[in-house]
Picture 1 (cartoon, rainbow over the protein chains, first blue to last red):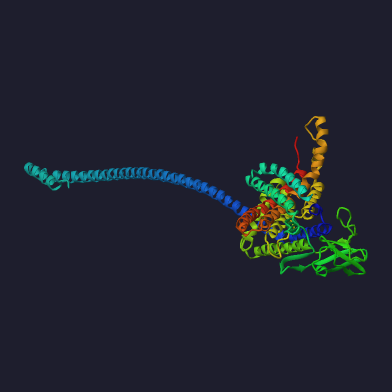
Picture 2: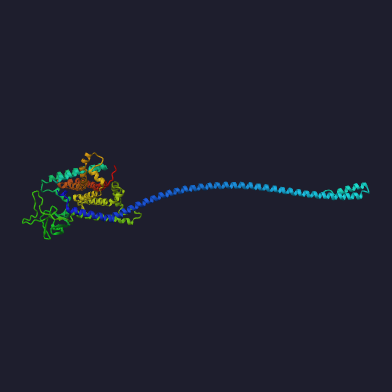
Length: 164
Length: 384
């Protein structure tokens, strides 16, 4: 009966209404709403991605830091080692130098002493020669006077010319 | 008999929906159908009883009058006089376009008041406008043996009660979603504020849980505006039908023309977007022996039309059914002519109304879901 017989007027109006409603809503409502929702979803997605990226970067940074720290530590060790080496080398060098220098000084001193000794000996020899000649002169000049006197005179001379 | 027809219709719908209910495991749907079924039976039996007593309150005609369309918006009866809002009548006649207000008929629906416009005379009989026959006995309507008027009819494009209700729903929907769209301009970071807090979850539900699973991420984008319009158009009209005071209460989404147009739109889209695979699965089902292919082809072919028809009947029968149950329960008071029955009658009608609030949302959802499913299956790429 009437209930299941579609009415032409209502068919037409429903078609027009739905079509209009669809077009208007699509342009003025669904467009902006879905746009806003999509934009928001996109921004959330981007933010999450950025966070992930930042996390990754931080991890790499951390790894880098550790690497740098490790390198620094190694360098420190190296530096210390080198310093130690240098130190010991310096010490040994100084020791050697000192040894060398002292030896040189000793040698020089020895030479000087020798020289002094030689010159002293020479002087002594000259003095002895001079004395001997003087003695000899006195002895020869006084020999004719007295034997005792001769002896005493020699002893006096010797007494006077005691080696200083 | 209309009642029997309606009975059969409802029964068919129940059978169709059983699959759906099993599919989505909605126990509640079964529950509602059992109720509907019981009450259709009740209203059927009471109506037949009622006809014997001509003097009494005619439940059947009261309910039918409410369920059907009319040319003016009846609000109430005051001291035996009907109070109604006149609506414009638009007719495409032999002499072109004719328009006048429905109040020109003076509430007459029996074809006894003639309205003369553009040299033509019109009468209204059972909410249909006919050209009046001119005869001397003031009988403007010529009835045939089965009480159907034989008069010619102009093309009736009037703003009837249902069209008025539809325009109102359009206004409500447009306001609601224009406000929603504008609210995003005020929000920071695009988070929903104001009315969008209410509408956005529903929009996202349709987008993410109805469109995307059946259509796929990319194709869904194209059909989401259509599905959203469909869902809210049906849902808002369903809700408006449940509110029993002017300017609501019209049974628009329980009208077969309304559900029919929406089903036709689904059918047209499905047929247009259908790919080669869809037609192949209908006319030459792959992967089955040839006799089976021949056997399946007519069934699958009929399926093309049964799908939109089931959409049309499901929504029509569910919403009309809801209105009929509530009115039948209220009518019990008048049938038994006892005020003592009123508490029970009102208790049950409120109970049914509360269920209806759920049903109208479920029906709008089912219509949208199945539309998405049909469109999605027509575009599906099969791999064998």
